[in-house]
Structures are given as C-alpha cells and as structure tokens.
Image (tube, rainbow, N blue to C red):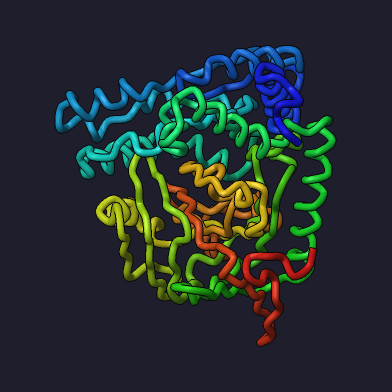
Length: 414
C-alpha cells in the first residue's frame, strides 16, 4: 500500500504506537529507558505519549549527537579513549534489573567515524562494550522487554539516496521505514500478528527438526555451522524473562538461534557491507576452524575488522545464526539501508561475539559455565553481518542426512 494513503504525521504516530504496543508491549507501572539521536525528537515525543497512555510510570530518554561524538575524536586526549561512562551504564543495568523496559532508536550516520583514528575507535568501542556489559547481558538473556525501531535522519538519508535533495531523501527513507515497519497497513497491529504467526511457524518447524548443523553454500561461501546443544529457534514476538511478550526488532524478518561456538568450519563471504559504529567494512571473507576465525580479510575496512576480532577471545567466534528469505520486503525494496536493523532483515546473517542465551532450552536453569559448555559464545561484542543472497542455499544436517531449508535464498517449506 502506498504511504500516500496517510499523512506523514499519521504514519509517524502509527510507528510510535506500533513501537510501544507491538515492539515493547509496555506494562502499567513500568519505566522505559530510551536511547536516541537528537534528530529523533519528533518520534520520541510520540513514543513517550503512547508509553504514558499505556501506563508507563516514567519515560527517560538519553540523547546522542553526531557533532559531539566527532568532537571527542578531534579534541580528546590520547588516554581518554579508554574511558566510558560506567556510572551511567551501571545505572541502566540497575534499572533493567528493577524491571524497566528498553527502547533504542536507530538512525545515526552510518559512516560518521570514517577517517578517524582506527585505534581510537577500537579503544573507545572496547571501553563502551565493557561498561555496558552488565546491561547487555540482561538484553541478550532477554530478561526484560526491549525494542529497536528506526528514525530517518538527514545524514542517514543522504547516504542512502545521494542523488536526491535532503528533503526528498528524507521522504524516501521515511517511506522505506514506514513500509518495512508495516505501519502503512490499514491495521498495523493485526498485520504484525499475522507476520508473527508466520515467523513462529518457521521457528516451530526448525525446532521440530532439531538439526545438528547448518550448511551454507554459494559464491565465496562453503561453511558448516554447528548448532548449540539444546538450542532453540526464535523469531518475531517472544516472551521476555519478566513475562512480557514483545517484538525486540521493528522491522524483523528473521528466525535465529544459538550456534555452537566450537563447531564452525569453512569459509564465508559477506553479501552486504557492514557499517559498524560509523565505519564501513565491505567484502568480508573469513575462514573458520573449530569455531574460531583463523583468517580474515576485507576489501574495505580490514583494519577495523581486525581490531573488532581482537576485542576478546569470543570476538573470533559467532553467537548467532539467522535465516532470512531473499524475498523479504526489505530485500525487495532494493535499498541498502547501511543500518544493521534493516540490512540484517534482508539476508541470512551471522553475528560475531555474544550469544543470545534465550535461544537455549531452559537457560534459567543453567550456569554460565554450563551455557558455554553447550556451545553458547561469550564476548563483549555482538555484531551482525550478512551472508545470504539469492545465490546462497542452506541445508540442515542431522544423523548424516541433508535436508533443504533454503534454496537460492528462499524457504523450501513455509
């Protein structure tokens, strides 16, 4: 449906409503912590309004600004890049432990830090990752209801549509966000219920099959990814540890699970660029042996990639594998969003680093040591990059048998 059926203001309000009611499913009396770029203020105001209408007791927004971020890299002292706001990260983790919901608004400049000192970027990223570790563990454990939603910003829009004026680029990007987030439907809430049903069915099929491993094959890719002992497939809406059913990502097209961090072997190539914390990494090619990346190259941004892999021991192993059909609405749009929330929902992908332990059977009954023994990776990072396309096929492996799952990027069963 064309977005001209509704005004921009109507669609913006619908997106805010979907983010609160479908994404978060905010509960009466629950606090909400939002992180967002300054350009997201119009959307934040609507989200805040819908959150209070749904019964939230307090909405707190923490804003980021590209110019002040760049100011740090231009003017800060050498030793400062090992510093992070631990006090704030500890406070956010405390709020999550006490039941607060989390929402992140994405829309930052995808290549903000291009041209900055790679060592400074790496050190600042490691410091932030360490500081945010307690809060991130609660998110990867799915202890609370959380959601990520997108907001168009001028810097982002101009990179996606460089031949358009700023105004037209913003309109085009908003149209893509609204369509992918299903707010152009007559009844977005019902549309999300049907979409969740499809994703749940795919997860159920894979959980029934209980494959031991997945095999990805295609140009530049021939890799076998073992699945963690007691893994579970998930996708769409899920129940968080606090009992709230939410949709962590808006939009979402994936079903995903926890791979075994010691049972990955072969070579794999990226099929879309990775934009990580303002840096571009493209044409990634890596080789795994017994779960660990032993060789890694990139046509662009290789130095940044190598620094990511050196973040800690777990950074050279994967913590997530996800299946996405090539015909997903985001892929069909033909837009390279330069943003992981969207691009990961256009293609199958893997994630370097921390595993989502929620994708395990009864994770609450397992110690961290037991989770690691079952294959769940442990790291301060979690970075998705895309490995799927219409030329990639995926098979499930079990008991020496091979079962087609995707052929040329499309589901064999659905």
